[in-house]
Image 1 (cartoon, rainbow, N blue to C red):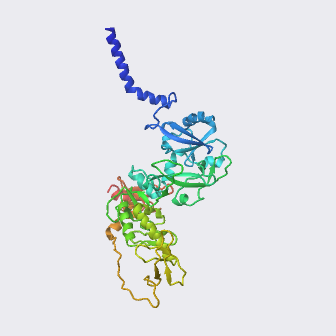
Image 2: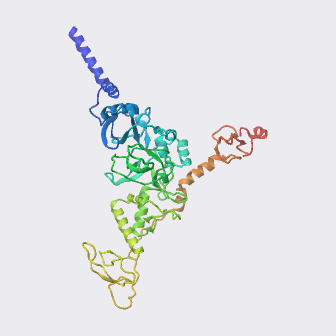
Image 3: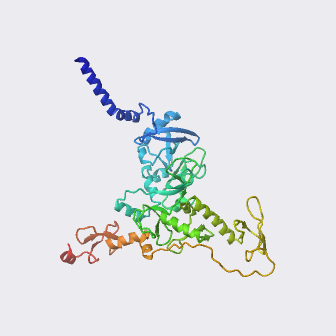
Length: 478
C-alpha cells in the first residue's frame, strides 16, 4: 500500500511541476535569481547598450521590467552604481519608474548609457516623459484635426511611418524615427522639445537638445529613420511621408477601393490613391516618358488628378515601382536632365549614349569609351547621319506607344483626404453662434453649451441663437 501512495504522490508532484514550471521559471528570471537560456523567446528582449559611446554590452531584459531594474542588471556588467547611470533612447532619458514595454524598445534595439550628471533646471522641466514618446512622434503624421478623428473613432490601427528599406527588405516597410547628436553622431542626445511637424525632422537644426556624452557640447538633434523589421546602427531608410494609414477609409481615386495603406498627393485637395494604382499611374507615365523634370525636385510627377502645385518632392516614393521600373526611371531622369542642359542622345539604334557637345557644334560624334558610345556621326539638327547642306524633311512618325491613365471625375472628387472630414463635420455639427466652434449633437435636448473653455455659450440647436425661455417652451425636446 505504501509504495502505491509514494508512486501517486510522485506522479502528482511531477504533474504540478510540468504545469507550473514555466510560470515559476519566469518569476525567477524576472527576479534575477536564475537566467533564461533561450533569450530569443517572446518575453525576452535582447538589446545592445553602448556605454559612453565606446563599450557595447548585450543585455537581455524582460519587457515587464522598469528602467530601474534594467539599470541594476546593467550596472553589474559595467561596474557602475545604478544611480550613476542614465539610459537614453530615441532622444529621451528613460525615467526609472517607466516600464520597458512602454518605451517602444524592440529586439536588437540600441540604447545608450552615460554617467548621470546634474541637469540644467530648464531641461528637467521641458523634457517630457518617455512613456509619451510614441504620442509625440505620431503627431508628425497626424494634424490636430486628424488626431481628433482617430480618437473619436477609436481607431485601433497603429499610425506608422513608412520608409523604403534599401537593406535586406528592399521594400516599403513601417519605419521608426530615431535621433542622435548632430555633433558627435551618438544617440546620447536628449531633445528639449518634441518634433511636431515633418519640417522639424527633415530640416536640420530645428530641434534643440543636450548631448550627455563626455567631451561633447552638441546642442542640436539630428533625426533619421530606420526600418522597423530589423535593427542595425548602420542601416538607415528614407522616409516616405506621403504614405499613410487610411484611418479615414477614403476610397482610391482610380479603383475606388478602400485600402489600408495609401499615398496622399501633396495637392490642395490631398487626393488619395492606393499603392497598386500609384504604381500603375507611374508606369503609364514612364512608358510615355511623361514625367516632369523640375529643377528643384528632379524627375517627378504631379497628382494623378491633374492638380496644380502637386509635384512629389521626395522622389524615393518612386521606389514603389520595383527595381526594374525604377532603373528605367533613373535612366530616363538622367537623359531628361541631359537634354535640358543642351545635351543630345545618340540616335543610333541600341546606343542612346548621352553627349554634351559645344552649343554651336552641328557635327556630333558618339565617341567610343569603354562600353559607352558607338562611333556614329550624326547631324545635331535632324539626328540623321551627318550631311552637308540643308536637312531633308522627315515624316513625323509617332512610334511611342501611349498608355492613357484615365480617371473618373466622380471618383476623384470622392478621394479627397480632407474632404471626408469636412463632409462629416458639415453633416453632423453646427457652429457655436458666438465663437464658431463646431459642435456635435449626440442626442438629448436642443439646449447646447459650447465646450470651448473660453466660451461656454448657451445656445439653441434649432434656432442657432442664444438659448431662451421661448426655445425651452417651443422645442426643448424636438
